[in-house]
Length: 350
Image 1 (cartoon, rainbow, N blue to C red):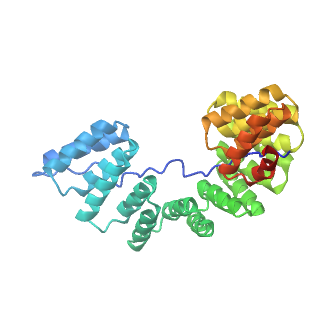
Image 2 (cartoon, rainbow, N blue to C red; image 1 turned 180 degrees about the vertical axis):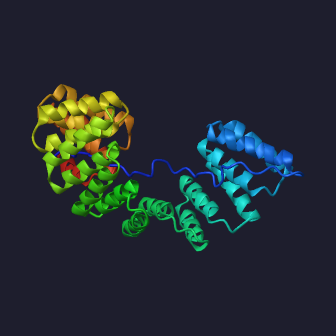
Image 3 (cartoon, one colour; image 1 turned 135 degrees about the vertical axis):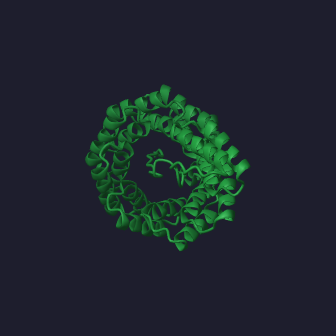
């Protein structure tokens, strides 16, 4: 019986989708609005020190004194963003725009908040407004590409990542994410080239090597994939995803004992990582350690009760230990969760 096997990759996402302050330089104190400017300047200083609550308090004080203080709203939004208060940040950016609708970067920052709130259509509209207001920076095209990637508009995301690279040829994140979009379109050769360029530009970013390895594995170059995963682990020793994926490549090469070591390492680093438990079970099945197989799949299912692949694989394990009732229950559940292959075995359960 064929087991279903999982390997994963990641999108760079530019590190974090956090908006940045538009202006963190202290303003000149002018007689007549001195209190507002002093509070604002204190907020700017605290924002630079990552003292977000204090910064918010000072920006709020500045706004109370001077209600039309655009920069105070923008920087308060940045502080709220750092605290993951995306709704609060969105409100502040909107207020800033209502005061002064000419600043492209505020629309750009508001677009990021819409994305963080999973309002992708609104995010795209905001990026377009930022562009119409004169923003042509690489980050605009990069993050618009990120949003389009999330919407599975891979061809469009590639166009945006390409524009970001045209503006900034050293933009490693844009190369990485363009590679990921190409990978989703099964253009593995193109993905590999982009990941290699990203790694050349930022050789210490572990996730790039993980993604490169996944594209190489998809293209059938398993030995190269393993070397890329080695580099990912070299730069990030606790990289559970890379251990899982390296185990997947070794499994494909029939190096089951070596794969087993990697899968065990992955679940040791991250015990809540369901795909690694599934893969551990599949590897144990291959080397006929049936007593451990069911436990591995059961752990994956405990972590993700909608994990159809794990139900299917556990059913196969139950078949090997002659537990037909449990086998049939798992095949039924796998079928309900969309694993079509499970339907082929339900006939034996009648």
